[in-house]
Image (cartoon, rainbow, N blue to C red; front, side, top):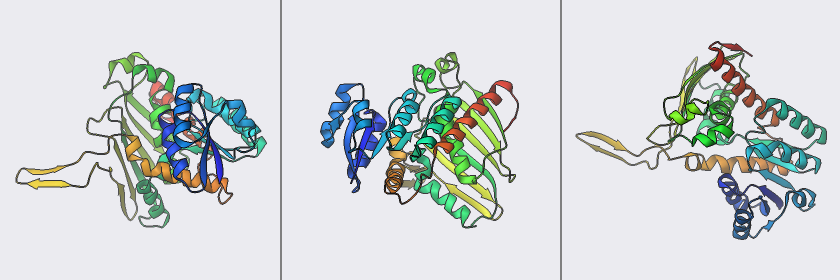
Length: 328
């Protein structure tokens, strides 16, 4: 049984707490959060301890840490955990500053501990199946990838100011997915964006609607379509075209019932938000991390992958501001 210290008792921390508790090989050992009320409530629910950061890092009973705290704490906590010899799971991103990410990863490498970065969409069964079928030669050589990602509603402008902006907060998932599916690092990137959804987001210096085009060494291209608003649920689709055919991963709907009549067809909307849409992905990525803890595998999504996704977000922002394609 692996004892896990959970850093962060907020929304994502609560999702992970369920998966830790329900897995036969892990136990939620302690919760660490500066907001004591939330930490106590979550720890009480699962029979865990409430610890300070220092106590958790020094506790020899803790095998792994799951970092689901505020973004600006991630890099510091990763370094502390690495020095303490803990196996590390960290929600994306490692940090919003690429230089800080690289310094952090150097510390992890020096301490020789496993670090897994939680780009959970890699573990969505639908998207993963597309990658597996591509690898099996089902559609031949990949030629073009289209990723559609639209949130049901925009975040508050105050969140935008601390999130690093749309590319670092939202599109970063799609940058990682493009690398994951194609299996290459892009050689160029071009981005365009607008503020169409919420004027407050524009006033905060960000966009809420974007198109990004990337080209890969093989010649394959990926297009990412983003919006902070859909109005009809969480729009998450993927289309991969190859030399011998097409693979698509469609939205997961609230239910599979359709009503047909003379007027047409009425079907359910896509799942409301990421907690529902990617529930299976969160479970699958935790299984992978347990395998890392047990020494059965090495982290499939590493600190390098986290750094590469942030690098692409930075270069997309550079392209947006310059109006030009950026060579990578």
